[in-house]
Amino acid sequence: MPTPSQLHQFLLLPENRSADRALQTALKNLSQKRPKVVFLYGPSGCGKSHLITQAIREHRQQNPKLKLENLTASDFAAQLAEASDAGAIPQFQTKFRQLDLLVCEDLQALQGRKESQRQLVICLDELESRGSLVILTSTTLPGSWIRMERRLIDRCRAALSIELPLPSARNRIKLCRHFAQMIHEPMPTSVAEMIANHVEGSPRDLKSTVERLVEEAHRRRQKLTPEFTQLFLKRELSTPEPPLKKIIQITSRYFDLKVRDLKSSSRRADIVYARQSAMYLAREMTTHSQTDIAKALGKADHTSVIRACRKIEGLISEETRVRQEILELKTLIKSI
Image 1 (tube, rainbow, N blue to C red):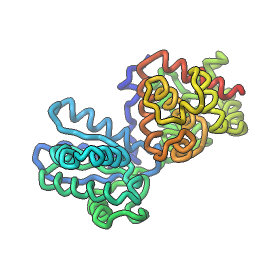
Image 2: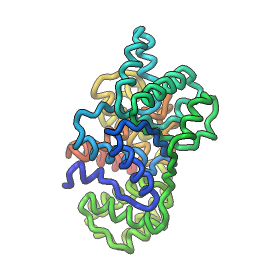
Image 3: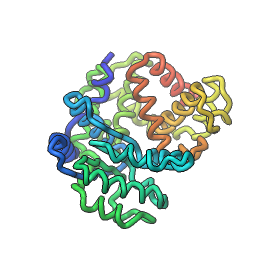
Image 4: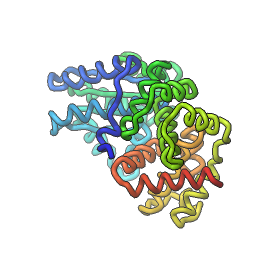
């Protein structure tokens, strides 16, 4: 099996090379205390988080004492709410003021959250005076945001802004072969071309399709031929996606829990893991938005789905048991 680092290796393409170059330069200049804000934007699944994570991982190996906070905008808002309830706003502010690097993703989630916006602007001001680096991301440009503080919009507009678009047809082929290689499954170019022509979405969509194709080939003891791939894609495109309700029911039953457990606010370890698995399966097997998935599981914010999927992806790459459980769940969901 490939190592976790191999599984998360990021493939540089023309669509993301400018963003990677900007991140590497900004991180390299951190020691010179030159304040900088980098703003990356692009659709969900285009690779913003993976690109940032890989760049930071490489830099941190050389700078282990780096003071870093990497979180979503919703996490920032949640921490602020907890600090407010505990009467610990000064401590919250101090924590962020001392950073060398702040990564705050999915800024669009702060729309309508006035106090969170205000505190983030204060944080950005402090980090600028400190000479720190700030990396911000969003699915959309600041101009499309509503109920957002003008100062925050202006900060993002003044930043080094770089778009991460969806990959071209040619690069979708490269991505398909890359994802197959990461799980040690050689993929003929003809098969990669076939997938790229059928799946015009994000790298995440391509990765999911490649993994399902390989799983199906292994289950049926077939080789990855164009003929088998064509049948697989035809079946995938013609088979209706499972309802969210069905995914939640099957997942709760599989883990010997009740649906209300998964929809509850319980932080019990087994319930959290089952809930995260259901979120991951819903994202992988349906076209529902992350917001829809979050609501179906009793969560108000789509970033709970983002965190859950990152957690399960990490466990899949590290633990055979988790890989097997997710595979069994997918089979159960498809068969009923």
